[in-house]
Image (cartoon, rainbow, N blue to C red):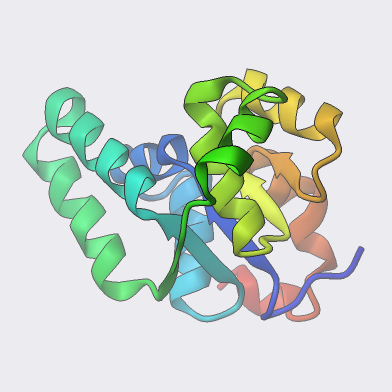
Length: 155
């Protein structure tokens, strides 16, 4: 599978938290590719709020500032959440607390759902919802090398 500048990654809260705590890690690197417009990124309002709340309570001010900086310099599309009936359907396939994440990624037609939650990753991929869930590290190792501009993405 070849990916390009139009490939859309939906970031769940775990990835945003990881990027805030470790900006040079996999999640931070992928956000930097979005900032360089080498790939597209998306999030939802509930994902942003969950990430902000967890960063504030668990990581502190420096990480919160890193989080805000990522949001300032990275063009991210804000995805809407599907209606209650669709969330209920998705909630029957994945953990109900994650239905809004998967639903938003599906509404925006993301190519990949980036998550550090192994259970969610497995549930999404087993449910065959038309979106591939993958960790940032696995995406970087297995998918990113097929990017049409791969050499420039490593800069």
